[in-house]
Image 1: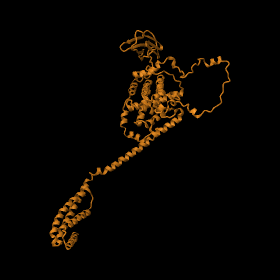
Image 2: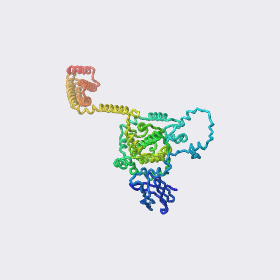
Image 3: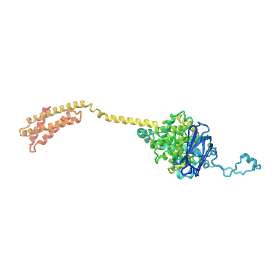
Image 4: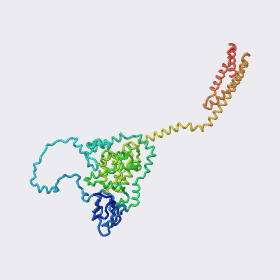
Amino acid sequence: MLTPAFELSQDSDFLTVAIRIPHARASEFDVYFEGVDFKFYAKPYFLRLTLPGRIVENGSEQGSYDADKGIFTIRLPKETPGQRFEGLNMLTALLAPRKSRSAKPLVEEIGASGVSEEGADDEDAEFDWEIEQTPYEEVSESALLSQCHYGFGNLRAGVVQRLQDELSEVIDIKDPDFTPVTERRQKRLAAELAKFDSDHYLADFFEDEAVEQILKYSPWWNDAHAEMMASLGKSQEQGDDTALVSFSEEEKYQLRKFVNKSYLLDKKAHRQVYYSLVDILLAYCYEIRVTEGEHNVESAWTIRKLSPTLCWFETWTDVHEILVSFGRRVLCYPLYRHFKLVMKAYRDTIKILQLGKSAVLKCLLDIHKIFQENDPAYILNDLYISDYCVWIQKAKSKKLAALAEAMKAVSLSKAQLGLELQELEAAALLVQEEETAGKAAQCGPTQQAPGSSPESSDSDSTTSSDTEDSASEQEELVGTEPLLLTSPQAPLLEEDSSLLSQESGLCRNMASQECEVSQGQTRAPLIEEVGDELRTTLQVSTPPDVSAGSHSSMQDGEESGQVLGD
């Protein structure tokens, strides 16, 4: 028999069951419904549902068949008009037979009789009290450690030991079968501290354009939550979230494929299941936001890496330590490491829990699909996600609402993450201020140059005038030299005098340009420079056949010129 695709909806008085039965004979079908039981048969399809509310046969039931679409629609009257049936989209739970809703052990002894212990004692009157005894043997430490459990509700053990090669690439913990809970946490915290990169964190802290863009993304649950808040007081009070969250055909098909199970969970394990659910949802919300709903090859890695439940088989005692652990891992492992992303995922998770188990189930189905398409992350479906998809359909909506309120009551700060984030940020801001002040100090003289130009102009004009005065004095000095020299050298020195006049003009121009570049020069070095040029010119212009006496006369002329100059 084939289980057909089906969908349930309701109004105030009727429950509508739409069953897709292509290529079936519509003329040959059977429908049975009574109380919470509903059965439909049309060869080769068979559908049996356990409804969340009671229906009744009173003559108002209706049925129709769309041959083009192959959909058989049945409207069944409710026993109590106006009652709202909860969980109409929990397909796996609806497919489960009514008797499987009781707490049935997952493992039973084959061949065990159904007689109670009391009956067995009565029948076996000659019970042999001389039971076989064995000497006491001290249990080794390795045998005790092998009792470490993990998986959904901590119901698994020994799985990793059998699949060590596959799981070594999926989980961070080594040998979880032999690692107790306290040691797992110690190793996880040490690994996070070793992985934390302050440079990466500060880069995202100061250059947060990409992070701000991610924060603007609106996932599907934002619209559903806004609609729920708008209709607050009607559907939410009655726990009806089917109108807010819809499932695709692929998701419905996966729900029909799940095998219904019942889980024996004590109070501690039951609480642990809810806590681990929060941890997984936080990682999923981060993944959806940073990829903007477009999953990629890194999606499976991101979810399992940010969830200590999945990669360290971590257990929890309260909501706050879950948030702290998630915040630390966000700032240690993924590409975008910003505290705002931690808080955004935290608020997204609260919205999903407030929407009810339909929204939670939709998220879990998406995680299941991501892991199923990733090798070897699919093993985490067997350990956690598949069981969560089945269990959440039977969970109480009030428990999810209470969990959302517990999360809202918790606050998270950077100081609680234990990564010294505030100290890093303060030190980085101080360095940034010092660099800014240093750049301002370097740019200060260049920026003040236009303001100091009047003083520079005055200095340049004063220096230029001093240069012209000194040059004229040198011209006067040169003009007096021929009077002191002997007659044989007079014509030559007159030519030299005119040459020196031109050279002195060149010196004036060069000195003026030099004064414009170098401000604040004194008068004395400039005069010495002109004097040096003067002596060089006189020495070059002297003919080689001039007698020693003439040379001495030139020296006498220089001395006389110096006396006159003085």
